Image (cartoon, rainbow, N blue to C red; front, side, top):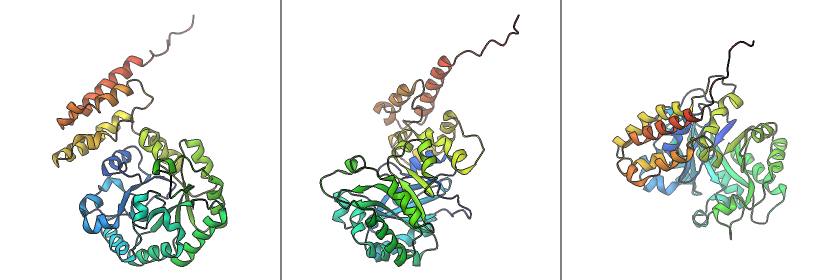
Length: 345
């Protein structure tokens, strides 16, 4: 268990909860690139916490603050139990998932299907907030199925806020199609309606509104921040993690120089060694760092080396440092010579 810091940065920028991706190995790695970004766990169902390997789902490292846990569930007593567990473990925020469209989640009567039951969502949020002293927030879509009008989103947020007092709404700017589309298709096919989320902040200026969905560049983030309080980014932050190196300066005014890619890896190595000592398979860790050198000379060789099954089976952390040495050598070979500084004649 870790203690929550007393002063937390605003939610100007956050990395979205992503199933199978935002585990503690990725979060530790991302934190070495950006100090201010809010990190979110994968969605954790209440059943997994109550009946499963509790430590596996709750464990995180002190370095990860500020960190939020995302819960999936709709039974008030279970959510209250899990909220108390998360608060006791030192999380900085509890987030309720009302946006996942998968049929497996729907069969448990939670996720995006809860948008049809705003009063139940409000009761869940209020019960958790009454039990813990950290913020309880909600992440949801702009609508479900063929409900396209802005009024549905406005009324959902209004009812949830009025009944629960929830102050923070993280809005994925697409509808959730509950039948007929896979989770992947739900991230790509329903059209993005950023103007709905911008309007939401206009209509509820006293609430903290974050926008999510399809955001992949810093210029877009800067534009959204003229309309909402924060931006949550998913896949770009995972596949191109060094993109995060600009976050602290751009959105938090932190003028400390970001670490280089090589410095990130060197800082990451003690954590890797500790994980291997706990018998964590090396591929559980290396899969999260494959995109670090995206767009750089030698990036393909970096990915190939850290995806080589025979090498990874040895669970030898030096595989990472060897891959780093290779890509640094490639980088030096591609570095142009310094300009001729001889005086003109």
